[in-house]
Image (cartoon, rainbow, N blue to C red; front, side, top):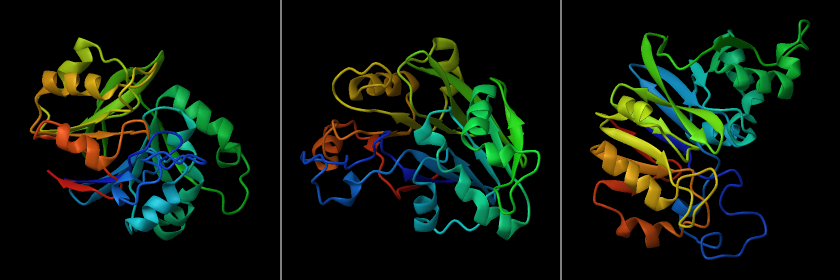
Length: 253
């Protein structure tokens, strides 16, 4: 399995428009963060988790020419806004792209992209093959995805486990029952927004507490804001098996 971090930033991205803080002014490419998403290459199959506003730019940057399916974590705009840009994959592959999401996610996509779901579609509109999921494992092209329900304040969000890899974003609480699904993961990706408390995201300290409970071989933090600090400042302070993810980082499992 190869995991590519398409984006590692929070909803505004980094740098933030109009901000001149140390992080937003940094020249380190690792401090330039598009909205959070990952690409998974598993046994020759190509999956994306979430299509944020930067989806087109991310897929071009990583030269991803084939897409087998999109799996959504939740319905917020920074995770769904780029769905229209699946059109080149429709044209290249001559098929609708399967999308997987909960009922609220699919309802939001239908509202936002009503032309995609219309009975009589405009020529050239994106084509999707809709799959509603719940908190039960599901298979995509023979690859098993195990949802992990977390909470983003009061909003249910799905993380996913694929083999020994777990990806969780936009969380500030995970029940012990759901954490049991994560245990045994060799690689854990988890959101760590900032240092100070936040209503709907793990802080750096809270994310480290989850890592301590799971004890993965390696952990990577994502969905990072400019309030966390620069890469060069924060990563040396982390345990030796914990890293800040950055856009374009590839991890092989």
